[in-house]
Length: 120
Image 1: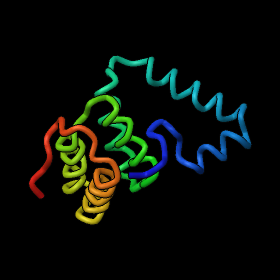
Image 2 (image 1 turned 135 degrees about the vertical axis):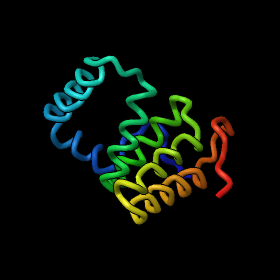
Image 3 (image 1 turned 30 degrees about the horizontal axis):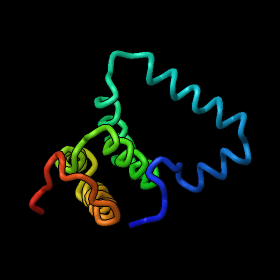
């Protein structure tokens, strides 16, 4: 298991935040404002962020959103379903990349067995 805490930001973002604290603070405030603005709940937003970051092949962002989704109780089967939905729109390679990242993350930290596990 990794020594990295689940709540720690990715290293590049931590460096950005250390180097440009005022910009990072405003970026985070913008994110909070956008999250609080609309009718979507935390769970819906988490699933959408998985879809956005994964389909754009933003590996670091996708892994961050997998961690956040898991913290909200979103299970592996649901996360994998989001990745499977990439297939018709973004194609096999994008879907496979996302599934591989999910596999890698669950190998590092299996976590509780809630949400089910796919049989693949």
